[in-house]
Every structure is written in C-alpha cells, then in structure tokens.
Amino acid sequence: MRRIHYSALFALIALSATTLFNSCCSDKDDSTVKDNPVVEVTSISITDAEGTVLSEIDMYQDSTFQFKVDVQPANATDKSVTYSSDNENVAAITPSGLITAGAIGTANITVATKEKKISTSLLVRVVLSEINIYQDSTFQLKVDVQLTDAIDKTVTYMSDNESVASVSSTGVITPGNKGTANITVATDDGNFSANILVHVLGNYTRITRSLTDEGRAAQAVDLGLPSGTLWADRNIGASSESELGQWFYWGDVFQPEDSVFTEDKYKTLGAYKANADIAHTRFDMATLLWGGEWQLPTKAQIQELINECTFIPENGGYRATSNSDPSKSIFLPFTANCDYRGWVRGYNNYGWGCYWSSTPEANNKADYFYFNEYDVISLNAGYAPTGRFAGLSVRPVQVPPSE
Image (cartoon, rainbow, N blue to C red):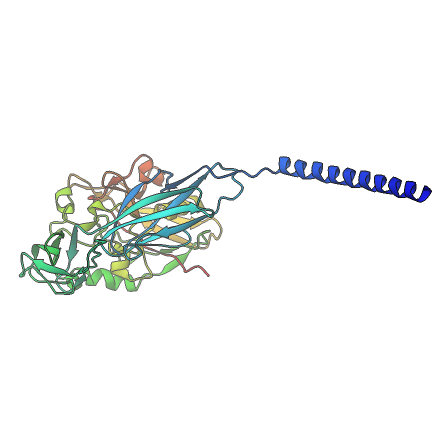
C-alpha cells in the first residue's frame, strides 16, 4: 500500500514537472514569435531608375532595359522575388531584372514573391517602326508571330521601293539608293502585317571613316572611380584632348550635310522614339564608331564623374582630376552645341560644353553633361534634359566586365 502511495506521488510530481516544463517552453516560444513576427509582402511595383512605376514599355530590337523592384512593406521578412517572361523570344529576362529585346512583338514580364502570393507584370512591346541603313550595310529583321491557334506562322516580306531597299525571303534588308522605302511583313494568309519605314542615308564607311580612325587612337583613362568606369581622353571626332570633335543627334551617327541640327531632320531617325537606355545598342554612337568596348556614358556615370572629380578651369575647358588619384585626369573642352533653332552656340568666348548621355527622358529628350566658364558643372544644366535633336558632343566610356 505504501509502495502504491509513493508511486502515485512520484507520478504526480513527474506530471507537475512536465506541465511546468511545457508551460515554460510554450511561454518562451510565444515570446519569440512576438519578438520576431513574420511580416508578409503586400505589394510589388516595377519602376525605372528614377522610381517611376511602370506597367508597360516600348523597346527597340537588341536593346536592354534594367528595371527596379519596389517590395512593400520595407520591413518585409523575405523581399526576394523571381522573374519570368511569357515570351523569351521577344523579351528575355535575367535574375537581376535586365530585359533584352529580341523579335518584334509583345511579352509579359512577371515579378513575384517566391511563394507566388504577390506578383506584378510589365508589358514589353518590342517595336521597329523605322530604321536607318547605310548604303554599305545590311539589316536583319526579326519577327515574332503571336497567333496561338496558327498552324502556319510563315511570313513574307515586301518592299514598295526596291531601288532604295530590297528585302529577302528571310528578312535581310539590302539598301540601294538614298531615300525611303516601306517594308511590309505579312502572314501568308494576309490577315496580319506590320510596316517598317527604312531610311537609306548614304555610305557609312565614307561618313564615319575619319571618326573611327581617330577613335582607334583614343585612350581609356582610369580615374579610380568606384564603378570602375574608364573615360576616353578625347571626344569623338577629335584627334587630341583639346579638340572639340563632332556634334551628334542623340542616338545616331548621321551628320546633316549643312551641319544644322533640326527636329524635322531628326524625326526620320530611329532613336527619336526610344525610351530605353541606348548604351551598347545600335543607337550608341560610341559603340558604332569606336567599337564594342566603347559606349555612351549613362546619366549615373556622368554624375559619378561630377561627384568623384575636381573640375579645374583650364584654357578652353575644364580638367577633371580624380579625387582618389590626383595624377589622373581628363580634359573636357568647351564644345558649344547646335540648338533646336539650328543656331551654333558657345564657340569663341561663350564657354560651355554639352555632352550626351545614353539615358533618355520623356517627351523626346535625353540627359546630358553640362558645364560652363562660370563654374556650373551639372547634369542637364541644373534644370532639365534637352531635346534629342540638338547637336551635342560625345565623350565615350568603357566599362570593364565584372569578375
């Protein structure tokens, strides 16, 4: 009887200890949850570099566009997202959110949380409404036929002016005389078609030979910038650092025969409607003239140059001296510009320089690097981007590949 009593007492003590232990552990777990609650993602937005929310964009073939993702709330426990494209042939997407435009057509880019609970989409239209071709070159059209029920997606190509631009059965455009031609791409049943206006501008080799030869002599200067960007030691069209070089429309190497830059002329060029950064695309004057290692500087790269260098007045311009290594510098001459009225401005004693970036802005404008003799050194003259049809200078850069 006593044994049973002790056993019951032992069981009672054991039960009480277990209850107390579980109670302690339960209180501790509740405390942990209360101290570190899981914060769920409530919204995702796709934005451009300036933070503007995007729902759709137009891109030109072979161009790229880097967007940003805004995940809310800011203190969400897991803000990681995945990227996907419903048409990789038209718009491919990398794990970092870089879109590469391929064939003409449309694609939806989806950004979603890992659990796919929250997502958003971006409509990408790859367009090619008009192009420039030089007489000693060709252009390969890429076409994406989006007919989900179509068995035969074969297309035919036609030109309304074969003497200016002919097109092969595979979409290769071959230029002829200077002028314009309309290329039509149509499905064999004739129910769907698209038109492309082709401008034949002249002999590319003759137009660009001198600019390209000068580019071969250009040196890339390492200013010790945080991004690793290297700046050319001269402008395109200049044979030395102090020469002014050549003016350009934004996004084209075409040179007006009368050296007057106007909007009417510029509207015939392909970059007039571009809304994505043109660095390293077929619109990049630096890449076209100096080769694939060179490109137009982006808005961010220009701002970095302004922030990381000291600008010292020098005869005819400024010397940008590296803050991290004062022995390294580049000279930027006052190049003036040809404004929207066709007036040449800034020569002689006016003293200012205007240099294109690769970054577009709304209303057919683009960002540029501006400085003058009154120590104003800024993006966009400190207030606004300029029309893409102005004639501005180009100072190319190189971006070493990331390791």
